[in-house]
Amino acid sequence: MQARPYHTAPTSFPSPSKLPRFHRTPSPAKIKIPRVISIPTPDTTDHASSRTSLDTIDDHVAAFWDYQFLFVSQRSETTEAVTLRVVDGAVPSDFPSGTYYLTGPGLFTDDHGSTVHPLDGHGYLRAFSIDGVNREVKFMARYVKTEAQVEEHDPETNTWRFTHRGPFSVLKGGKRLGNTKVMKNVANTSVLRWGGKLLCLWEGGDPYEIELGTLDTTGRFDMINGHDSSMNNRRNGGDTWDITAGLLKPILYGVFKMPPKRLLSHYKLDAKRNRLITASCNAEDMLLPRSNFTFYEYDENFKLLQRQEFNIPDHLMIHDWAFTDTHYILFANRIKLDVIGSMTAICGLSPMISALSVNPSKSTSPIYLLPRFPEKSPSNRNWRVPVEAPSTMWLLHVGNAYEAKDVHGNLQIQIHASICSYQWFNFQKLFGYNWQNAKLDPSVMNVKEGGDELLPHLVQVSINLGADGTCQESSVEPLNQWSKPADFPVINPDFSGNKNKYVYAASSSGSRQTLPHFPFDMVVKLNFLDKSIHTWTVGARRFIGEPIFVPKGREEDDGYLLVVEYAVAIQRCYLVILNPKRIGKADALVARLEVPRHLNFPLGFHGFWANGS
Image 1 (cartoon, rainbow, N blue to C red):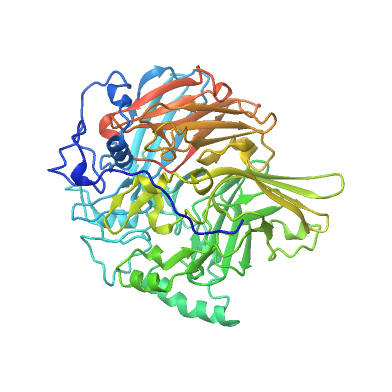
Image 2: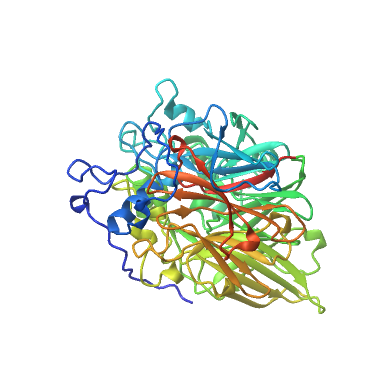
């Protein structure tokens, strides 16, 4: 399907001058629409009931403020673990003991007039330690003390002054012209516990190691550049782009302080081989019509087992990717250099990301199948030639991928993922953030016309390779024909890389006319064997983030689902425990635990479940 221009009919939201009085909100005569807000001093009021009359309000004003409160700044940290109060159900006695880690941004505005994009917000690590024996949950939350966080935060006065631009923001109260602090590593995107280390990752730099128990920041953890030091200056000659790369490296490495290789924030766990797989790309690839990706595989002690580099002749922006027994899989999210945007970005007049734009110039989507073990590959297939999927799609997140051979030696690959359209995806408008006025616009995420196709949704990508490696067929279909907007597909991690029966994801019920698509308010469970779909909805004026599966038995859906509920109308967060087998039934909810109001936190990005052992 050829990408084409489109016109949206966004949900309309009130202007500041027309906002009526709305419960706790000051009158519009005294306040402008907020860029972001901070949580006030702790409220010790006992909100015994988590359901209030506020839940029944659903108009444009309520929708606008609900969206703002989802990105509320949280400046408080815990000094010691806090036991969460159970407000519904009970923590099951057979819940596996362990910790659910959730990371995401914690701060969006400083004390000097600057506001940043949610993707540039300082990493705020949340930890829910679950004790099934004593049937209790303890909560901790700390900022990741990155170099940028230490520079921008004064711990004595608990005040902030942003000095780093970050890729998606423009500072108002800080230095703009000549500010080369672009690569603001905020360690806010994903979290991982592996080889005895707890790591917070970000899209474009080294992860930060966190001390288990206290959540104190240990410092940077060099996962890749130590292994690649001999490779950084490998290409000293060659074609035009090699020469251009050589000219760019001193500027990017020296002036903008970019690492030679940027670690991607998404990693993979190979359950069969008990391996951690990570990927990186070269810093200069952002500006060149080619892409270099390096994959690393580690054993359970963080020993590097193998490293492979691939040079792809296309300009790509990769956030997530997939793997199977024999392949690394890259969906070619194609981008191009924006010349005018590059000049304004360098001058500090626009975000650095404005130097790039999406490139929907093809009617198909290239998918690169890169050999994971080239020496064992039975075919001589040229991996530089991509499979062309019959759809123009921008990949967001991968739930799982696996492969199987038929009796004739043909290889069948299945990928379960969330995608969106090139027409809708816009680097400068993610989450509806407008860098020019530093405000959040919910309508960007809630287009009315064609929303099911334009916005994030779940698909199954099927690729059939012949015995000689040639592509026989490829297809892209909605997962179980589920067409509602959805993202963050997850599975039982014990089945990662293997054939799975179930996928869980965050989705939208569409029950709110003013926020029909995002934020998400529903967990969906898709069964691939019988094609059934079951859902659990959080309720009115409440949202959810990414679900996480906690295994406890041999069956694929034997375990529990964890998801955070954001009750924005009352500014509260809850940890919700669901029974995966009962999704779609009245008794799916196992327990709901309340985070104290003074520790209420903004929307998290990605999480990780770590068994107590």
